[in-house]
Image (cartoon, rainbow, N blue to C red; front, side, top):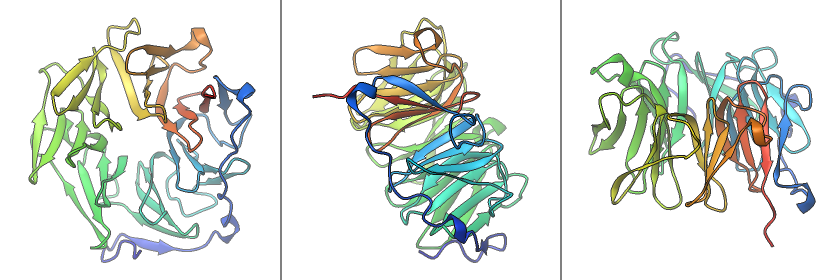
Length: 335
């Protein structure tokens, strides 16, 4: 793959040969007796350099990547922890907020000051957008046609099409400032790209963005996720329900956790079809299609404030927290 070209601000940087082969083999499945509980990985008990984990990603090799805000990004192969930061690599900003693996297996890191791309574990590219101060990246998403969408904090979004080899954007919405804050990006079962913004949910239909506001007082849309049943989940930062969209339209769902509003930060689906919600203030919540299960301080979950939820190749659930590092749940083994 020929990475971004024809962009003045895009540079290739080489080095870091001592990091080669540091991320190769996935972690082995643990014994059934060592399951159905949460483990904590923090800077005292693991190789994580910091305890605020904004994003977690399992790559195609089974390695797990952690965006450690303020400390760069860390790769865990089940045995070895490898950290990339501004001191030991060409990752130019340690405030990493989002991670993506592209179609070639290269790693993309979205930071408060642009995009940094690690190619073949050796070469680095970076892209700062039209103005370096404006490209504060919230989300990187790759759609079914391998188009990479980059959502930002206030400067709307950019696109990268691999066959063209360069970025386009920013595509600024003129309606108001809130709609230019892109918090999440997803693609529904019909192939339409959606964006979660501080103003509304947006759907790209025939090159035009359709705006969906559920009511005038609906808070910012924080998270989106399309599950294996074709439901597009939409969650707000302080909404009274979560919403999913399918062929029948929009459905509101209460998480039944005793709260009048939810501050959901991320959504994911495990191998058994359970939907997981990470929250700010309320731990994590699992929905099996019928029953809601809350994991909170009172039943052994160590963090109330969480940014993300990820499922690894073994089916384990990982949660990135604000102060407690990465939290790993090993589900019960089914016989």
